[in-house]
Length: 213
Ligand SMILES: N[C@@H](CCC(=O)N[C@@H](CS)C(=O)NCC(=O)O)C(=O)O
Image (tube, rainbow, N blue to C red):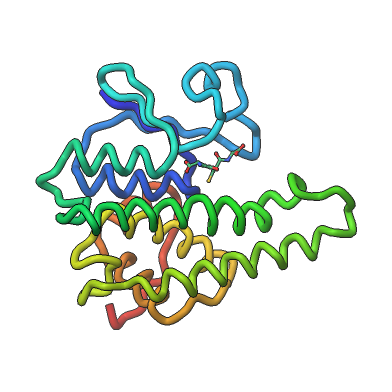
């Protein structure tokens, strides 16, 4: 059975959503990041980078990094159409996932959530977090121009790129960061997906879904 290494409410939530959209049977291995479980020798033997998500395939091969795992899921299970259909849009989906994971998450949210990693001096804490919020806001503005689908998804149907965008929108919701209308609309649409609701419930979160839904 495949094994997913994950932390509730983290970027791995996006992969968790994709795996449940595919109705895959897999082992869910929860790592407590604040306790440093991802730094253990046991986990480093699986993923030497100590990051989640990681997915161990039935073959024993290990996939790490959101974009790589999402890409593999989309390619391995093509009938679910988790990748856009044409090659240009497939490349754009990769580009969007990369932008979300490396810039909005990797440059922005890390400054907000793991500020200490950036600090040379304690007094820089607020400025570092403010810089993180600016990066996240800038990232959302860029993404807001990229919606091409009529249904509010990034492409003409739900794809891996939507799962990546969802997890940074979920964080924005958790810490009250404003999103541009197109991203807020996308977040609302994602929150209406039964799988998203189930995954968040499984991970211990309750969504405040408006009655209009
Ligand atoms: N580039 C990786 C980064 C993933 C990442 O930073 N995950 C966070 C949790 S959301 C993590 O593992 N943090 C622990 C650490 O970096 O030490 C990816 O896209 O999967």
